[in-house]
Amino acid sequence: MSGLFQDDPADQDDAPPPPNGPGLFGDALPVALPEPIHATPYRVLARKYRPTTFDDLIGQEAMVRTLRNAFAVGRVAHAFMLTGVRGVGKTTTARIIARALNCIGPDGTSGPTADPCGLCPNCVGILADRHPDVIEMDAASRTGVEDMREVIEATRFRPMQARTKVFVIDEIHMLSRNAFNALLKTLEEPPPHVKFVFATTEIRKVPITVLSRCQRFDLRRVRIAELSDLFGRIAIKENVTIESAALEQIARSADGSVRDGLSMLDQAIAQAEGVITGAQVIDMLGLADREAVFELMDAVMGGKPAAALSITDRAYERGADLGALLQDLLELLHTITRLKSLPSLRESQDLPEAERTRGAEFADRLSVPVLSRAWQMLLKGVGEVEIAPDRRAAAEMVLIRLCHVADMPTPGDLIRRLTAGGAPPSPTGGGGGGGRAVVNGAAMISADPVALAGPRFGTFRDVVAWVGEQKEAMLHAHLLHSVNLVRFAPPVIELRPQAEAPRDLSAKLAALLTAATGTRWTIAVSRDTGDASIAEQGNAADTARKTAAADHPLVRAIMMAFPGARIDTVHDKTADVYGLPVTVADVPDMPEFAPPDAEYFDEDPMEIDL
Ligand SMILES: [Zn+2]
Image 1 (cartoon, helix red, strand yellow):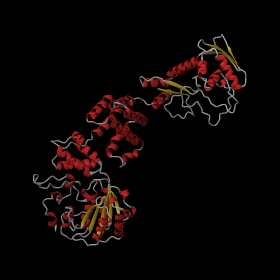
Image 2 (tube, protein in one colour; image 1 turned 45 degrees about the horizontal axis):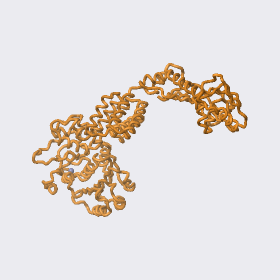
Image 3 (cartoon, rainbow, N blue to C red; image 1 turned 180 degrees about the horizontal axis):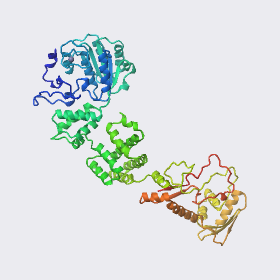
Image 4 (cartoon, helix red, strand yellow; image 1 turned 135 degrees about the horizontal axis):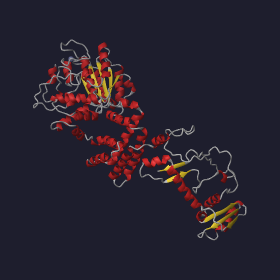
């Protein structure tokens, strides 16, 4: 019978693999076929080394164990659902199941077995993809209900040669709703001589009614180490010398798919002159950018700007967009931070293995504050590159900046360092170690005067501020800059106007105040020196705050850690709009208790912008 299916010399591609011994996917290597090299057209590796037995399958131990048990006790399901990413062995498994069901052994008398002989006519026919009772179809190209009716019609006939008719339907999720419904009736009452093996990359698109009638197997991505072992064994078999770095690169890029990895190996062999190196594979697969991202991460986190720039130079020469490179770096940083926060992710199948293993190395090295600082800088940097006239220059500046902060302590580190052995943390302070410097311990409760008629003037500054609110911009400016207060005794104010003050200043102010309060105000001109102008006092207070801030040990430490930093502004939340301290005595009518929405100013009286 085998002759029927093996007499087509034009289709060498479908010739069965060597029938003797276990294949390459298992532990032992098969005996080399005496192939006349020049006469045989090149067969792709994935086909040449397709597993033919359960032992040959790599990376699917759980499924193989279950199937073996089922065959051992003679309880084989009538429908299987195989799911997994492309190239993990779904249709290969389907064919092994078909052979296991139909093998009759070399002597033609054996029953179903988990270890098909590979020699009997059924094994040979199925191996050659030419058995009339093993029907494979691709649901991606035959989605309609008519296609399914053909299948159902075919199930009604007894097998021609085999014990069991096996229908292998790949990409089953592509079937139309009507086709699924038609199939469902047959699945509910399958003829005894029929088995179905379905395969899908998208199990969620398969109706639950169909799923519930199948034994389901989730084929997992094959691990990098398993893949690289397999590819190494095949390379030896093919008389190809390949560096282990090259095998590793191919295994990584295959991302769990044996078939994808073997295609890459095919390509590498076709291009190779002599030894296949890791660099050649990186080049061939266009992995340079991916590699560059890992190298860049290493350079910036190690504080090595020269290394970072030489990586970007090479990337630029290759034609890579440096903005995209930064974006990739940002994504890698996110992955590393997730790995740091979620250790279980290191075992997860959701992340490509390369990201998990190499990302985990970074996660072990870098602290969360360092990672989040880099994240913020990079996020900002990516935005800068988008609007920069020269993307390359902007990206390089971002990387240099990152290199420079890489080995600097975080503000949290500084605070911990400075407070270690110092004063014990205050019981109410929370000890959070945030990055904010608390410079001024003064406490103050703010409250708006409530339900008081007319403006209330506790100080001359209150008067000036009120004038500012009256849209008297010129008068306000002169009161700030051009007068010295001699005496404040409402409703009398004594002022010493400076030369630039307008002559009608006193009259104008008196009129405004009188109109607003209903009390007659007197603005007297004095020859006494008086206080400095409010503007002068504000400047002096600002200078004093900066001096005090610069003198604070924490700020000194920050200035040392970040060379070139300077104090830009010191925000004092206890100061009024003129930058001058408000004292309780200045506000005689303040309520004794704070309203519910009062702000407590003692939490962060000063913020320092560096
Ligand atoms: Zn057999």
